[in-house]
Image (tube, rainbow over all chains, first blue to last red; front, side, top):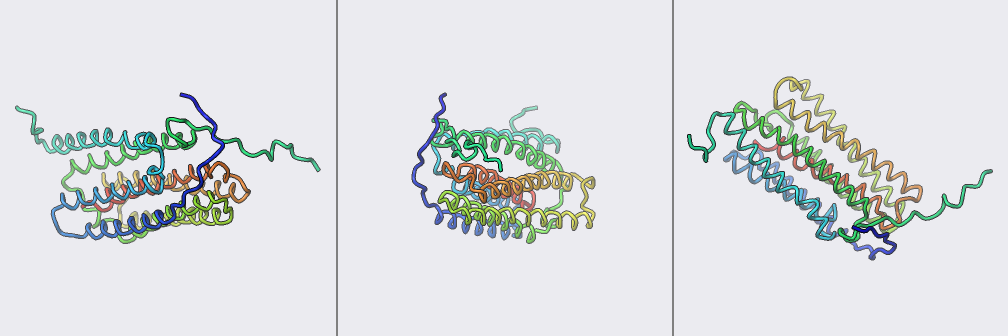
Length: 111
Length: 204
């Protein structure tokens, strides 16, 4: 890998409109989330909706405010590649915890 | 009067870039690597929260214990501070020093407001008996939110140092790369709060 010094930059692109647009999107999604938390429906449905909304908001911040959308794809990979790995690790640990701690055998383990 | 050496006024050297990441400077790539590792730390804490909660049928609904409208307002403040941060970066990239300092200080102000809100929330909860050793929920709640609060405090210091540098005419060169790296840290703090707010405060 070689390093280069850069002396010239591309003219500054104006993203101000994007910034305000994303601000309103984040605001609306937050209001929706808070509203959902007071609904008396199936907790699993509420949880799934809320996690989806939170991940959408986090993605908007990462892509637009942290400029990942405007960076080279390799930097996007650097940021997002560990997430599915960590996410699958978390899912299996949570499955394990919720089953073992309640004394329920895992569905794929035959006794 | 001692004259300062000429080198002190020399323009800052252009930062290095790693071609693998396009025009991203090594400083920016370094910050991203740090943020990914920091995200893993938060992930570990949130996972511990999830595991403890999954194994406990008596876990109280957070909305019945925590003040959701107040925390929603603090979330709003952090989102606004992310907007002021990008406006500060935008001004810095255009070379508008005064405007950049104004937005950076406003962003730090949002962080200070958030921290004051967190102290107020803690005082209220402790008064209600929701103390660190009183159960798994309060223990994980305080560890996660105070760890995040530590990041907010760090971010406020980072922003003020950057704003001071910009006010002295520094950090505007090379596409305001330094200000952009500061912004990465601040947006990360906002991004993590978005997840903490949902997972710890809202999920029933």
